[in-house]
Image 1 (tube, one colour):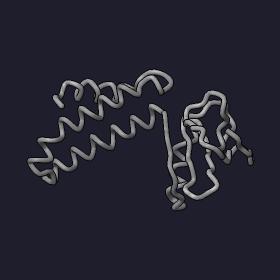
Image 2 (cartoon, rainbow, N blue to C red):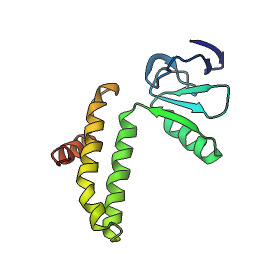
Image 3 (cartoon, one colour):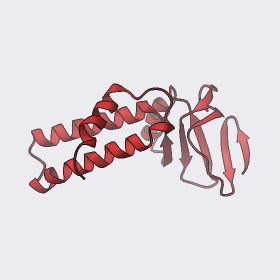
Image 4 (cartoon, rainbow, N blue to C red):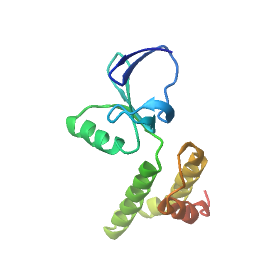
Length: 146
C-alpha cells in the first residue's frame, strides 16, 4: 500500500484493505495510538480517517451534521451496544404503535437470531469484555429458531 499523510489523515492508493481496528494507527482527532473506527470519504482520492473509541462518536455526529458522506467501519463494543439499543427501542415502539404486520412479527425472531449470531461471530474483533446489554441480547435471541 502506498499512502501520503496529511496530519493524521491517510490518502490511500492501491488495493490494500485498510481496517478500522489498528493498534498502531493514531486517532485523527486526539493522536492516541490504537483505532477502532475509520471513515472513508466518498470522493476521490481515497481518503481515510481513523478514530479511537473516545473520539469516534463526536466525529460521526459532526460528519452527519455537515452532510459529509462516505463509508465507515467501527469495531467498538460501544457501537454494538448503540445498535442493540436502537433495535430494541425500534421494536418496542413499532409494537406499541401497532405498526408491525403479522408477517413482520412472524419474521422478527429469525431476524433477531441472525443479528445475535453476527454479533457473536464478530466478538473477537472488539477490545475488552462484551457489555452486559449486548450479552443479554445474544442470550435472548440466539435461542430463536432461524
